[in-house]
Length: 448
Image (cartoon, rainbow, N blue to C red; front, side):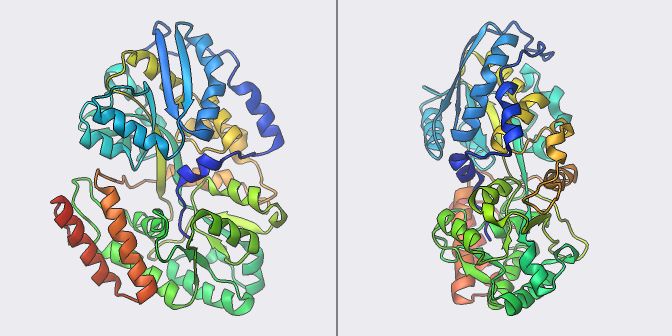
């Protein structure tokens, strides 16, 4: 199934990780904290406005009292702008020369490159404020995601790894050992057996691309091969062996009758979970809470692992999406704004409180020392679910370059995927067309 956009999850999130966790979180944001040792010290002053959305905004609000004890000269106003409204509001503000922007901006990995490229100076360089001291604290690949040409444009917040959530009871009924599956070709063979024994399809994809995130499964498959839509130089990399292999896997799955149509996006996905009509949800870290929330009667029937490799011996870990906190380039209180971002994102206590409250997986590696990430999950058959993804974050990670032209590339890819799924088109042919179209639209070079 496609990896539905993590922003949709955060938009809807009222996730309870557990009663004790929520209780612990209640005091996590208000307890007095030691004065930060960063370059901003406690001398920064000013009124800081923070733009975010639903779940993350709620958790940052809980952290404000503790922050203001540490920084008595700073007042913080966290605003829930909404998602996707925040992206239009940030874009409008930057296009107006930064007028009306919040001081701290919560930005997704797919939007950050566009803001950097289209609006030079729109985001502050955090290096003069001391950001470099935190470089080694985050999951591998995250620092490269927020930095460019010696400048750092944001601090990493969340890091969502690719996951493979599956109905263990259905595979057991089919006599399939999911943990033994090493490649997606083996998954296809297992899916055929699963369908024969249970009548359940393996996974689901939005075949006609009715939603913008319908190609996220394809995206995960290329990231597992250390590739993406663009390389770090901005060249188009859709007409490559990695991309063709990924789309070929999708075609094989579909030709074998293993792919259900998930037209309609989120609501359809929830329906497939409740009905048990597909056995696998190939989704990121945050998805576990969605299953628990929407199908409590399926407790003990689910398990999770990292996805199988695309090729034998290949990678099984990939950071498929992330979000960050940036400081507006026109902010008149940059030091104070950075102090808040630093407080939220570089203190393990802050990130643990946020995880307990909303299940947002931190990019800050020291946060994973907390026991909450190492507890057994009754819903997931006694697995220590947090450790599955923690191991992925410790692995080398390919740095994805979304670039300012990601929306164009995404449209071309979803169109190509629809041709494969609905018309049986050749993966290599449609990806060549997609790559050429992007090159024509953007002037970028195609790597072949």
